[in-house]
Image 1: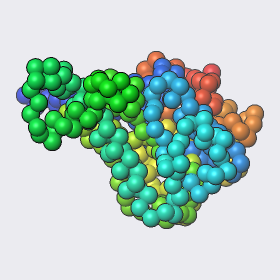
Image 2: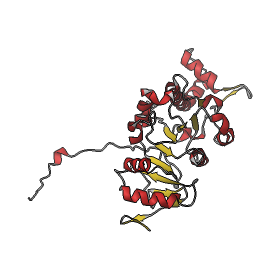
Image 3: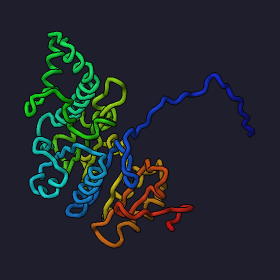
Image 4: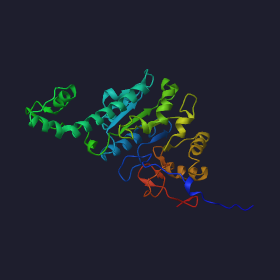
Length: 311
């Protein structure tokens, strides 16, 4: 059978500008926003690994606010302290309306960012009006005056931004779900919707969105009452620790099947975890072009695969 082609130039697909990963991150770290699934048995690497990853984002000025959802957060206070997580951003997974509270935080961050941009855009005009004695008594004008007034110096000036990133981009928000298997949260359909639309949360007037990265830390990949398949299918990164459950390991491999064969996955998994139960395989399904591999042992060692065989 012979197949020939003929091009129809008027019917070409046009790709809109923009990207699924809109925000710059340090060159050694994965793209954002992301959905990350961390799978390992109890007492291994999950919380330590994710706090270190988020710490690296924060140190690289690529993340501003972190939400933590866990009923064991109190036992990890030292780890959470290094991420500057406020108590108001820690939630119990069985608490009613958790997903709405997360979405509200993203929208609040969006509103503060938009308001600051408006203050910056109107600052020169308002100062000019004051200088020339023009002070239209409108609620909006009064609102600007209050925002610009510095009680310490009794002068008007541009207020400091909540985050330094405001000059370049909106704040980057992340949420960690730590050991939430069996909780009411995972039965909430709104969590699935949040995961599917995570990049579009907190839409901006000029287009784009604040978005949110999501990190699921679980002890079992497909347990009853565990992560919905639709959530697993949204994952852009996986962290997989040592396990004796070969069936679950195969299921993790199948979740990556669109990007890598199960044989290659098993090879890099064993290489990453052979030395310690605290080591893990990191899989980045949307790696940056300059990263030599989508696989890493922990975060700092690339596992380079060629012709299906690890070098």
